[in-house]
Each structure stands twice: as C-alpha cells, then as structure tokens.
Amino acid sequence: MYGNPQGRLNNEVQDLRRHGGRWLKEKREHAGLSQRELAERVGAEYYTFISQLETGRGRIPPDRYQVWAKALLMDPRDFVRDLMRFYDPVTYGILFPSGGETRDVA
Image 1: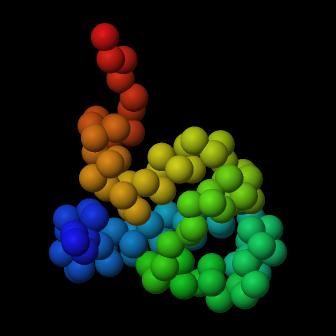
Image 2 (image 1 turned 135 degrees about the vertical axis):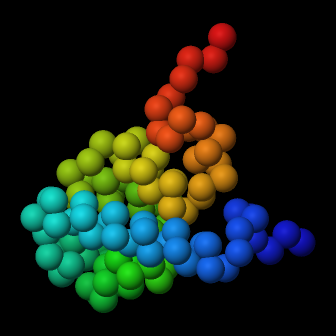
Image 3 (image 1 turned 180 degrees about the vertical axis):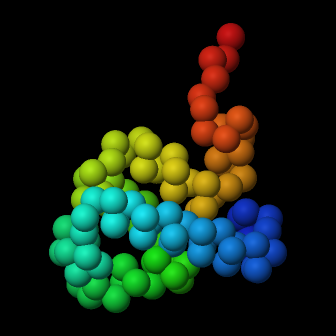
C-alpha cells in the first residue's frame, strides 16, 4: 500500500500545510471574520478547529469546501483550486502546470 499519496516527505507535507494555514488565515481576515465567527459559519463545533487549520494541523474535509468558500466570500472553484496547492500539490501541478492558470487542450 502506498502510504503517502503526494509522494512527499513528512517535512514537506507539514510545510505545505503551514503555508495553507497562513493562506486560510489571510482569507478569514480578508472576510473580516474572527476564528469564532468562521467556526460558526462553517459548522465547526469548536473554534479551536480553525486555529488548528491555520497552524497547519489538519485539513478541511472535502465535503465542506463549498461551505467554507461561501463563509470566506470566495467562488467555490477558486477556493478549491487555491486550497489544492497545499493539500494536493501533485494533482494541482498536473491540472495547473503554469501555477493556476487553465489552458485549452486541443
């Protein structure tokens, strides 16, 4: 069984999660929300879950992406694409080889 679907070392994964956490914090602050307010909007039982994500400990469950995008005042596609950079960089690199721009395939 392949244990690391991203093919990265644990330190690299943690670095990506920390960068992703900073990105989430930036989006939360841009939306003018406290951790507590965001937790309420996304249905998190404890606001400390937001803190954990913002420090790179944990991931947003994929079935909650649309709720999070709405709470952060983002288009769901933009939210998932940006989040994918941190959660699934291999797939992100395949889908967006130029760093996020889509390209036409003939």
